Image (cartoon, rainbow, N blue to C red; front, side):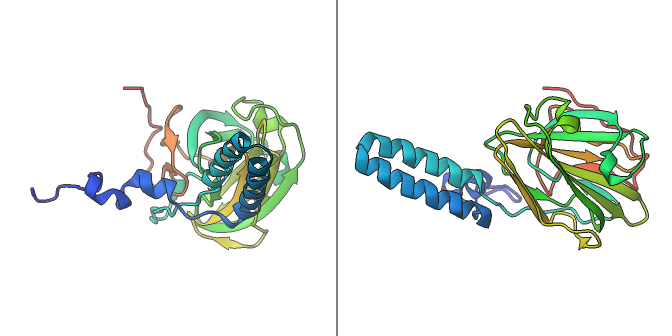
Length: 246
């Protein structure tokens, strides 16, 4: 076998294949009540009429898949801002941060990541730092893929101080069918990049407002991996990256 050859994708090593690791990932503890309800409903449907049991089994399998919580490898160099969520980069625009975070009215670079119902929905801290403020705001439930969702939808906004680099904001936004935002952070808490901190059910969006002067290193349409994909580098001075479909 040639030196350095990667055999992780070969059939004989299927258990270590990245896709298998995603499918067979641990389940987030918030998902177990939903899985239990699905299993009970499946049993009742199967008892009432067997074909309905198959429908219930399929729905329960999807719920189990939705709440998967795979491990991630987070880059640890100071100054890196990593994606807080899996999903597609929907927008990269200039916009004022949420008013409830008291970060001023000057526009910042906002990266919006849209999560569809098949993405991992566990959210992760984007950078090392200290939580300055956490604020919940009720709102509408319009399609999270729309730009106005950042302003109109129900949201949980977090202000995070990154030592030596100013503050950033990360905002969990409810979507068309999302009705529950969970955030475990509190003001004054010290956090590490890549740490799990929340969850949105079911289908949603996460916005990241970069500190002043930071350039985005992702492009619209790009897939982001929570806790791994670098959204910005606060120390490199690299200009914004451009991307194209190939």
